[in-house]
Image 1 (cartoon, protein in one colour):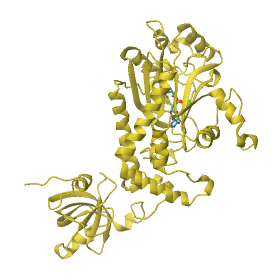
Image 2: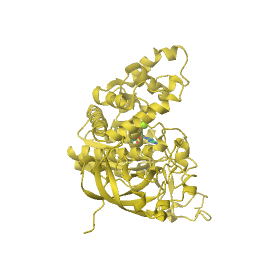
Image 3: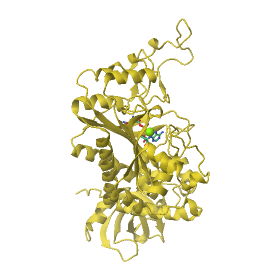
Image 4: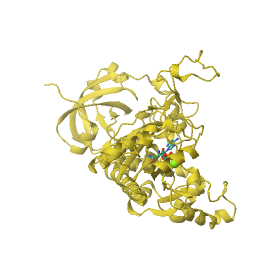
Length: 481
Ligand code: 4AD
Ligand code: MG
């Protein structure tokens, strides 16, 4: 009978002492010609393989090197050694893919501490490291939790298009999509690019948000969410921005801003709690990792709380909800403001800088903060005007260490007001005619938000650079791999 391969995770969980098993994985270490530690990615732990080297041919022995892929058959035995409860006494070992020691020594597969920068340069190999194994397992579980959260509450998963003709956020930071020959671009009489000659017969881009399409879905299906890649060509090389990132955008009909904030808070608590419950080993590893990392930093930059404590802050607190106007007041009365410690100005009508947001969350309230009712002039055209004619029913959720994690709003459902806003924002009605139409036929109050998936992964892993929580980061001047 051919034995089926077992995952290391399930072997450790089931104990299975005495049984004959087969496992496959990559060699992490090989000591004394006798102990091999292999990892198969199913969990952070390695399985110790014990071999009788006399039984193996000397040739095979030289093939078992760090980085090599092996398949081992043997018996599960209670381990006498420290660091593991079970081990496998090997009857047979096959080297599936050999790794040259000389070549391995030049890569991050060499078992020692590598900087995150070095790991990023070898993004094709970083899945083999403990840190990135943990990060990407948590990323997976978060994605699953998100689908589960919405499915359990009767939301439908809507696939918004990736290629679009509209600029939802109006920020103009879009990547162009074209099949035109860039060496001979068709021009019209007045010398402008003739997009009627292009693939779609009009100007198109990679989407910055699936929201407008999600609204159409919600205004028929009731509650929907998108979960897909979004693209922004902003040239900001920060630790919190990507040119390609994943966004989750729920949209709910018959709902106002308060319903939106309630949903956002419940959703974030659910996701963080899910990771605390389901990713204990990986969290523990990453927590220790960030404690080690902190030791090398100046006191002021160290985390006051551990990763699990920070996650607990989300789960166990009611988020503070304050208006934008109140936020400005708090900031104007703050110590750093009075001592001129803030780099950016604080003034009603201006966007809050990340230093301001972090002050509110980390120093003043010491818990997540939702800021709502922002000045209309700094927010998008689709947000619902408040009666004061100055602010819109917008909300941002701010997290410790991250800043803005969610941005959302109640939508302008009144056709005349929306048309007026299109005019104010210079959006030609013919570009969004299909969006405006929904306000003609049974329009209803509705609301939604966008969660930056990578920012949530950063929060739940303690990683401080967004490039380290997406498998293949795209940032200015960087689309390797
Ligand atoms: O605040 P934003 O721009 O909101 C929207 O796009 C709305 N259409 C959402 C909606 O109401 N349906 O983006 C939403 C979130 C931000 O709060 C942030 O977490 C994340 O997306 N985000 C980015 N994440 C990584 N890299 C970037 N360049 C990001 N830009 C926004
Ligand atoms: Mg925003």
